[in-house]
Length: 89
Image (tube, rainbow, N blue to C red; front, side):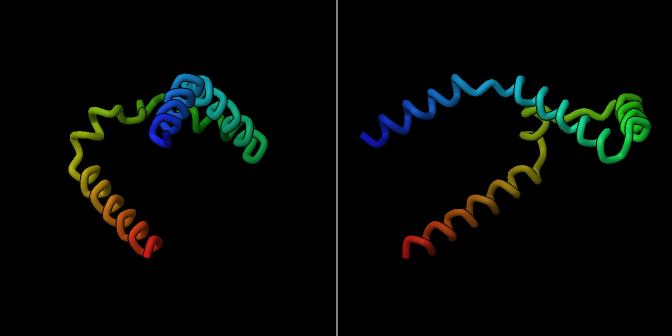
């Protein structure tokens, strides 16, 4: 019963959460915050520098090609197992 309810809830959240809309909203809110805190000119200069440098995020294939990704994953999993075992004891 628990597995069925968990699966139904997971599928519901995967279907209903729209990540691109949230990403666009986060970018817009971040820009508004920077304009409010640092001013329009400083924010515009930062955006132009980012556009000229061509810096962009990595896609999932790039992450899988990095060895440090696996090292961090293994360390994270071992810490989670240690914490879970400690909490159950």
